[in-house]
Length: 240
Image (cartoon, rainbow, N blue to C red; front, side, top):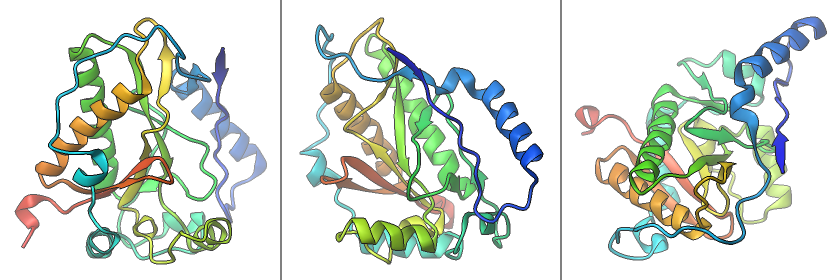
């Protein structure tokens, strides 16, 4: 079944008129329709296996950068935490709004807003492109990565902690440097070459291992949330 995910453009405290907001939604919908359309589930049978290269251990063992490491880097290169999405336009350094595209799909965000610092936005795009290229090299398949969490405002963190006792107030997501990519579900755009979730998960692991080895990010494999928790790093030439 093909579904069309809604475009969500609401911004807390936005001063624009309802007419302006409606026009913005209409424009965004027209420009991004191809990237919001997708199947509402992955194939449940008849999938074609693909070659997966070992990465030197389980995903949980390989991707085990601690929250302390993520947080230290986020504080070093990110924005100051904000108390509402509207403040994303007023931070001291630039942030980019991320939207569904060929490289990834932005989920309906319930506890975050779709903004990242430029380095993190570029990293997300690179991960999606490398994933697509690797999938094509292994025989094809029309899948995209699913982004499940991005920048968390102070209010969003408080709401999340009420629902999830394991959520921490000191989250790297507060600095615009960090995003989560699901490994439990991938966006299926067509079933011309059906793939298994397990193969796509391990292929993503290969891509992330390469990028982390290039010292572009820190990564934590989150078991309960079913995602890779990823924080961008400062460029290598600026690392001390």
